[in-house]
Image (cartoon, rainbow, N blue to C red; front, side, top):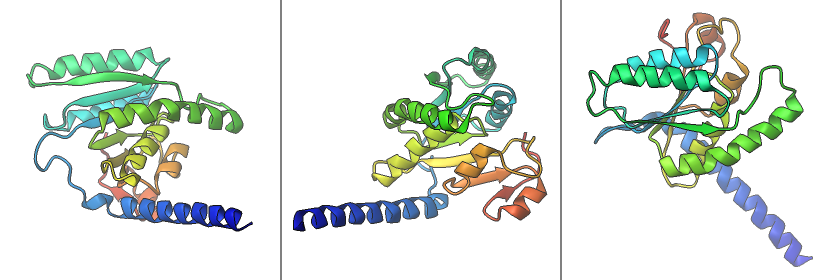
Length: 216
């Protein structure tokens, strides 16, 4: 009986420490300044449809200091792969040091997929995201809404919780979201270091968000 009580207390203490660590990582994230002493390694999450177009417009605004760039897409998304390669080829004319890779993980959630099966597919995507993010150890994860970014952001957050490296999570809500956040936005809002919205009514609803007008 004493052994069981000891195990339960140890588990509760571990959970408490993880919660405290999670709170610390999230709250101090905005004070972290990647790239102060060199290039910024960034994981860019692209998604099917307009997500890839929007995130590439964001990439156009970033300087050459954001390198290497690791694009992550769903394994069934060939259209995004073509767009990324075209974008990077055009970028190479002005940036001789351009470095990028394209990585694939299983799709986290299909359009109109049921909630129950989405949990399973997201956990499957997380199994691929963890070793990928732990290997790349990026300074920042940049995403704008595809479900694929959830497991990648969780993996980046885990790096900070474990004390291995602080990964800045930057989320830009799609221009299409005017009144409410997307499902991905609602999930990542509490853990994002910088959360950008493109409509003033969203800023009023979500005080943590940052409104700079139309970004993309």
